[in-house]
Image (cartoon, rainbow, N blue to C red; front, side, top):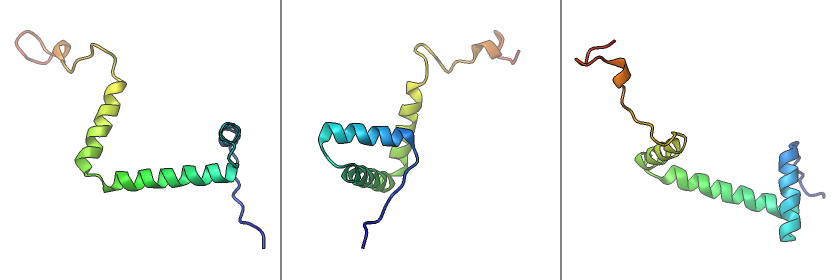
Length: 85
């Protein structure tokens, strides 16, 4: 009986798997297996977290994309009396 096969048609995935196999000396099938196990564990840990922790992490990720010196001030929308322009 033959071993089950997994076919991934991604040049990037193939390139990464080959590079890791060369660096580690591990067969590509074992590398893929370990990567999937780690990803599965990561997803399980994330789903076990409180929603507020997930939200806090998302907000932190979003802040990385904001240029330095950016504020939430909207002074340009209002005149000196606080009325919309």
